[in-house]
Length: 324
Image (cartoon, rainbow, N blue to C red; front, side, top):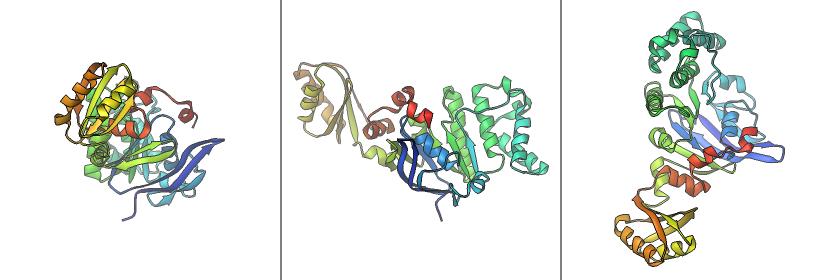
């Protein structure tokens, strides 16, 4: 079975700025693919090319078997796109907007009515579908935008940070809806997110882009294994180089990294090494403000690949990606 999305050497430049510098990936039919990257890494630019909103500068890409550069109209009929900032007319009802969306895709009135019933139930809008959108909460607007992207029953759904700004309950609701789309419809979903927990929970595979290149890819479990079995993390006041040297001397320590005032040590047996690490740091006359033992997370993988935590990179908005 051919891949739902493929890219080979995909590139996009803006003047002298190479936003996407040669990305190769393949997303299989029915897969949920999580796409992560710091601001300015090329994530949004890559997604815009796959959705035919931007033309590649170099390389090739196909979506649903069609070329993004030469067959954009064929792709648009087969994809759904729910962008982070949905433009919804607050004076219309949800039903009116769904009806309009179906008409724009050329669906018959009978097909629109059938699809409307399907998507309203799937995204759990309920009776609010007949209320004006201006009365909707942020979570309801997200669900309506998702319903609009599904009205024509796309093969592939692109979700751009679908839960940004939502409260935890609404976020969980959207996660459940994404799972239902994948489980019940067999839909391929390309998901960009700023929440590592979201990617860990939903994605079959994750790709991490940095500096315009795909730097890491695999299942969440595979990516976590690249960091090590356990992590000992210490926040320290004092000479970080001296702290790192002291920890490296402890038996069983595989690697040590410093990020600001935080030191992380990768070790196969964290429970057996944490006491020795504490003693080593104490003997080095350093003030340890916290010391924790935990298993690796996707945030640790992201930090290892990009040099920044995803939450911090999201806050530090980059002019590069905003301009792209």
